[in-house]
Image (cartoon, rainbow, N blue to C red; front, side, top):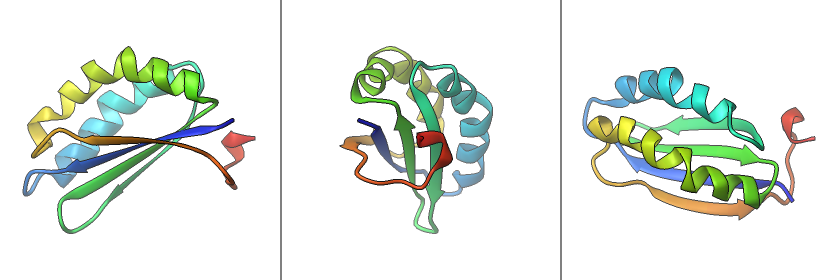
Length: 101
């Protein structure tokens, strides 16, 4: 069953652009190399909040990423985060994303 990892991040004031730049240049390239990674969506709002939703083939691959690559990737975002992120994992009930097929 497809799985999502939802990362909730409170950004420091004025760090949205830096967060996006770091995510695109240093985080996404590594995520794309992970077994089972399918897609990713990054959301930001005007209250310095970000939600990163990544789609995985299954929970096993999402958990492997969580225990291997994730800890060193989240370190790269530390300069723009106000506090440690909150991670939630869900099974995907429905999706229209072509990559999920």
